[in-house]
Length: 299
Image 1 (cartoon, rainbow, N blue to C red):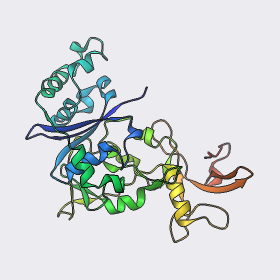
Image 2 (cartoon, helix red, strand yellow):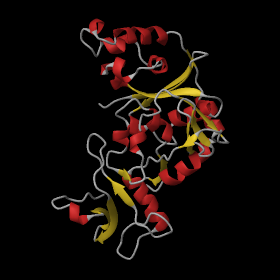
Image 3 (cartoon, one colour):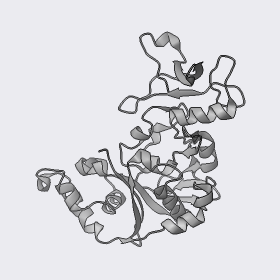
Image 4 (cartoon, rainbow, N blue to C red):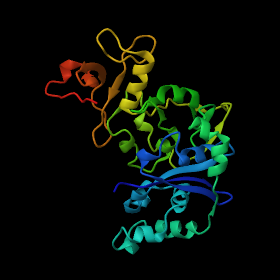
């Protein structure tokens, strides 16, 4: 079946939260997703703690993976005692039993809000089919920031039907685990910062127009291998040898694939080949001397 996620934006002081069933991560982590534009809308109004909460956390050791009060509060926006009881034998003797009890008690205190319609109108979704990538995504907890204009430039992609697609930064940065691997299942551009996945989970976020003092801008990019390849192909073309270019400076697009733990393989180029069936995209290792016995992927 696969892990189901919930987009959770929550105000700890007012005990107000906005929670949507975000389905499987790779289905609703995009800029056109209702869960994404609703969270972006809220973050443009004021700060919220954000957690893209997966259901697999019910089998995690909470005492190791969710140490802060704000993390347990985030889990309480979409989980109850029953969720843990159904997935754990002898729950009462688990080291994290008290944490489960706290989650269940706090689940009852939230006032839930629905901003779906307001968010659609705010971003003129019927026309744009996307949230707005302007300003800065702030992490008040870590005093970090993502330049959303820069994120957009690095993370743009095209679907196989030629539509603009964007994996949004918020779901990846705030997920509880296991989602990013699915969104980047076939690989990513070499610029992708997969090491940041989940590092903002439960933190206090906000989107603003101007960067505050003493906030460090971090490089952030999440884009799958083929979406970015198609974008670069139609934007920058290919060189004389048929390799897809990544910019106007005629540099070749580079990408990587991952193993099941999201560890990178060797860097690859993508070459456009043609036969009687049409065009085909094939990867080739950048450093061919290190790849004896390896087979290139194709799309």
